[in-house]
Length: 138
Length: 379
Image (cartoon, rainbow over all chains, first blue to last red; front, side, top):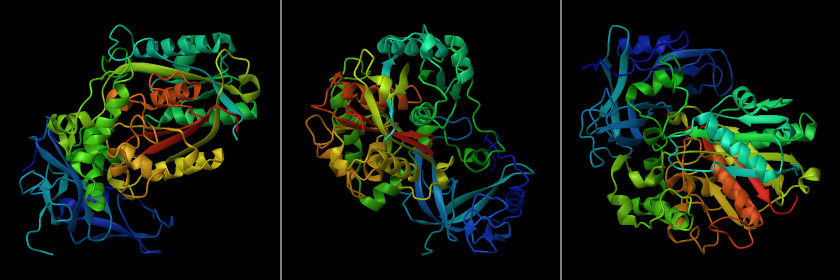
């Protein structure tokens, strides 16, 4: 369910593949062909070894809840309280996102809980990767 | 060894709520007070550094014709970096006498340029802003739950940072908040962004400050005793808090702090007085550990056991800090002003025989850091 007031990303040439991926239901990361480092956010070279030989691949979408806050103040596009989270992807990189599909409370948001990516369409161009509890997966 | 000293230091005449003064005038009010403190005229200044306003704007407003300027702007620690860059400029002969100014109408918003924010095509705009962060209270705070789980820091220990700093502020007539508080007061204050309560977040005030630097050789000829700069450091990590390499430690703190202490040639036991920029209550905890004053995971108990409180072994944030003294937005200047007062022996909550003060600043959300070591004696 898209929120029309949410501030939306404006892709650049270097990030276009990421946002194409989310439109197609894929969470795309990059891997260095030289040193095999997996990284995010997107850029056309490896932040570990500076190689320009890098590949895009589709991540598993599995993640864990690495840290978060629960914002209590009013935001024009969000109904407070809502979580702002840093999730750690199974492949290693971390990204900011929201954890949805559960109460926005410290009790429900347990650190290191397993999460799965879900894709929320905002408009024809932009689909955001959000995360929801994975349930019993360990 | 740096060879440069602070010979003039002052804050704005007023601090707190100053609706009758624009932001650039806050810079100028502090600058004029610092010139008076140093016994200098504006014509004596040949170097200008500032953040928040442009050095062009400050030089023109004050009537300075500089041979050296620095507009490094990496957040609230920018002024620590200006000190470091000014030392290099003075030592290389690019200028002789540097004025560093800060002024910020953070609360009253008078004459303050509009906040442009991060455009939707920047990395922050693409990969953080869409998820609803609302500035520092929801971004600077994001790492702390990770720290709490990894090291067992309790909500009560986090609250104690604010409690102890209020003890210092209670001794300071210029502090915005001076009434003593308890852990319960902190934990019962309004939740801003879990796990941070109102009293664990910095103030929002108006004010300014300025420093004047010159060479050690000239520094003895000024009205106040020189505050010698014996070591500095600086670094940056990431503009995106979500991309910190380790949410429980600041790489910029570690790099800047190590460089400053190494240059100063000091050990931790040599530090009589410590300032750690405290935009939020977890900052002093990270600072104590990243500077090496505490082992990893031990700073919370170090603070809550009273070691940084009045009478403790390591007096920390003795003006009351950003949590209780003042915080206009870029607080680093006020941290350095307190270090200067402590070394001069003129602080409202004066530490006995403070010979060496270490001052650690942060910029952005753990994005940048500057560190300055000040001493009563030259290196």
